[in-house]
Length: 196
Image (cartoon, rainbow, N blue to C red):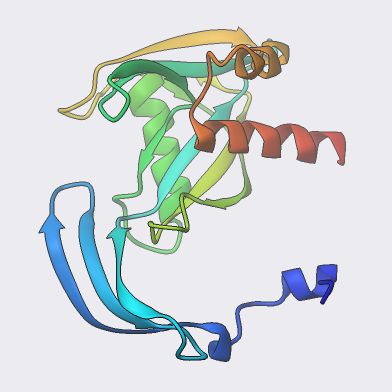
């Protein structure tokens, strides 16, 4: 059966969800919990123990200056054991209705010293729906300028750069920017920009 755009835009129906029970927290740390559920498909043909990571939402920021440059950060990434060139961002540790925006503003300021007077939510991306329960919220921060001193988290060591905005696609093509959430956010920015 061919799906229409209307089908894609509809929310998940309750009868499509798999039944989960007997949640176990297998491991817990400051970033995420590893959990398992006994899970059964709606037609009862598939069942088993399935694993996921539960964590808070994340944010990242496309911070653009009046000079049409974008702010990037370079930091060590433990998973790949390498340095990674990325958008500023981090974990949403703030609570309340505006928590995603406030977290984005804080991450930009703390990691780069830049602030902005014009913020737009570009959208949200499921971080990795196969194993994770969170979303990454991508913000555009226009008119960004360096106004603050750096204020890294205790586990961060970050270097920031200003590069011409037009160079972002080439950095992705050359695999200099390789983080999937950054590439998704940058793609969202250019897609929305081209259709506005």
